[in-house]
Picture 1 (cartoon, helix red, strand yellow):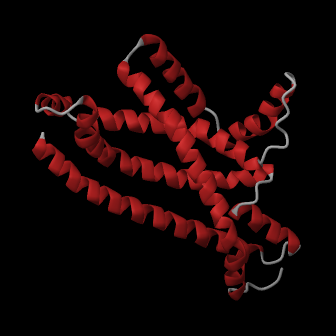
Picture 2 (cartoon, helix red, strand yellow):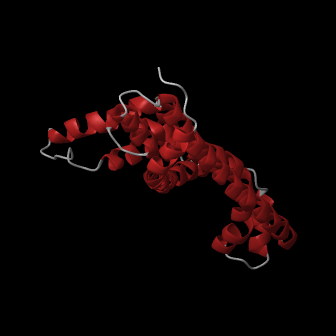
Picture 3 (cartoon, one colour):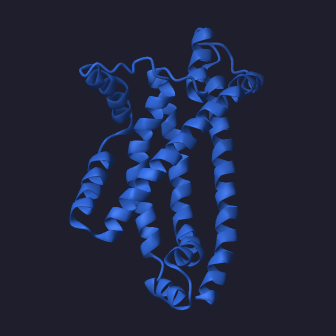
Length: 235
């Protein structure tokens, strides 16, 4: 075991920096597709129609019970094998597609609950007052409901984004080279040397990304809180 070399942490940071984009791209793709599914789930539960609500409830229950690593393996190994039975070969797809698909499925169930709770947290009387004052349903939602619901949703959404970033490190288990994947490759190339320094470098990157996420959402929440007060006064 060689002595600890703090200076090598900076070498690791330089080598891992280009792969931050891969990590962020996986997060962005998951938020987009998972968010779209989450909106549909929240809408199905809010509208209270029996069939869509039942489908949404079953989807949420099943996906929230599956660990991330298992869902990732099911999507990466199971889906191609299933589609191959129908003559469809997706084995040559980019690994990022499988990562985004797996985490979108999981992300959507939790995000749907966040959207639903945020919408229900807004007094329905405000929508009625806005419509009575001459606004259309869309204008009432966009100008009155959405800013207030966003304030309720942002703290949970921020926490979910941080958790998504950390769980996204599991993508290296199927060979995706992101921050975690490249870090493990560095350890392998160094034949196990500088392991602590490498993991410290990765930890610093994840700490920095977490700080940036919390800073951005903190400012968003502050700005939207002002909008919420204005929307309340208008209603």
